[in-house]
Amino acid sequence: MKTLNSLPVTLDNVLEAQKLLEGIITRTPVESSRALGSMVGGDVFFKCENLQRAGSFKVRGAYVRMAKLAPEEKKRGVVAASAGNHAQGVAVAAKSLGIKARIYMPLGVALPKLAATRSHGAEVVLHGHNVDEALAEAQRYADETGAVFVHPFDNVDVVAGQGTVGLEILEQIPNVDTILMGVGGGGLLAGVAVAVKARARELGRDIRIIGVQAENAAAYPPSLAADALVPLKKVSTMADGIAVGRPGQLPFSIIRELVDDVVTVSEDSLARALIFLLERAKMVVEPAGAVGVAALMDGKIENPGTTAVILSGGNIDPMLMLKVIQRGLSAAGRFMTVRMMLDDRPGSLATIARIIAENDANVTGLDHTRVGGSISMGDVSITVNLETKGHEHCEQVLGALRAEGFQPIVVH
Image 1 (cartoon, rainbow, N blue to C red):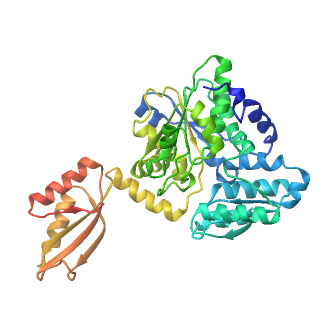
Image 2: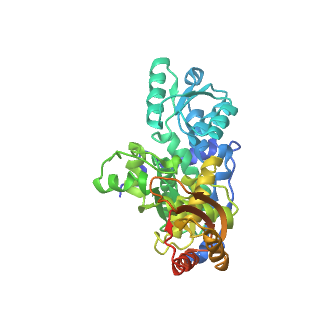
């Protein structure tokens, strides 16, 4: 491991950022989770950056980057690109500093994120079909006009600003053993690692720092294995806040030296974690902010001890939330869709309804189709949406249907 002072971002940088942010950001609360703690056998706390200004930690790094601009740079304005959280962080910081901000967002960006960014006073331009295309256009605009490009993670001041989350965790949970957080480009993970590892060394302690990625957008594990940036060919995850196909060069140089591990979680695990946070913690968290919870629920972290999970953002599109809730309930065995072929005669549907009722499941939707390419004359296809009580209950309902001669196919 390199000496901490030889890294591109140091504890002094983070402490300087903390001073700049005084009176600007919210010192977000820490909430304990007895339910999750009982699952993992240790104390678990949530660092609630979902309650931060603009709904995520991103305002920290954006403000520090922009507050340190020279007067002539501020006059030229700033430009950035983002699908959501960075856009809002830059917009809020620009408004606080009196700087003109132009934000490029991809076509099809979630309406709430678009509206929120505009409401903070930024000029929003829709461009491209993904963040990479928006980033390229933002860089072109910066080169053409002289506007200062505010990168979401590949900048010393941005990383230092994000690292202030780690300082707050150490003050709020002095006995913390493990800190978990999502990682996309790596700005938050790198900043927290610098701050926490430096403080831990001063105290003669060992505090583990672990990053978590969605398995369909996990560029860090192969990059760390190769000790070089390995871009992904495809990124596909509901966790749009960490859907980054290539690690940032600056964060990577820190993460490979300081971070203890980077683990991955599935989309189903993410959905279950969001349901857990809604039901048990009463927290609205976006998928990228829930990956640490998913990793704990999946048992990906051995002997975590006293654990802090950074809920890094709460900006979730209500339409995505609807889909995620359904997927989460399905993954937990609390929602099931089955399809069956029946004889098209009176009483067949009543028999299905009786079996379901006798096994204490609840029908929430039903589709009854007589005509289709795979439906024979005299048959009918039905698709039933069921509210169930877990995986064992699902198997009970399916077994009862099979015992009566039906052949249910699980769709979800």
